[in-house]
Length: 175
Image (cartoon, rainbow, N blue to C red; front, side):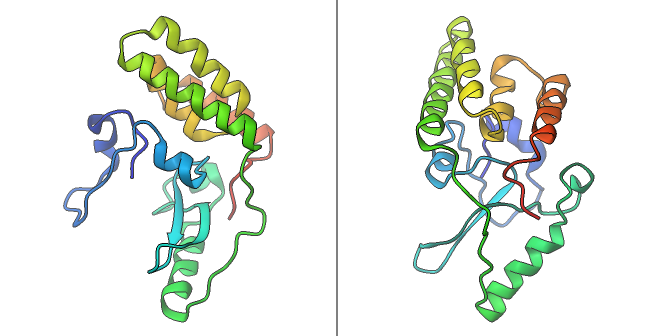
């Protein structure tokens, strides 16, 4: 699933020849339901639809390893142990953001996104700013809002956020 605002924004990240569909969650509704606060994340569900492992950083490859410090093989090996041995490694230090602030932040981001799509960027900006204030280390809010604010999600605003996030101890990243 992509949290991008449009199919064209997601397309560069979707490999050619996939045998499954990629969903677009432009409003971040699914991300909100499952507590995704960082990207890329994986949520594990069993065959009965029960969440067995909450959102965890899980890159498909080591493209971002230098930046995140996360080795993709750690996730892949854990997934294999679950599939082959029915062994599920719990994420001990995972925690949802503070419920009230997180909920308000998501609401502000959603209103900002709606206003942006309605052509009211003048009103949207304050909602994006309030969402970032309430959830300062939430990647789905901070980075996900960059293109909606006319910012390059791989430019200076990303690297400024990256520095804030790194100074805060890289919250929500588990290896």
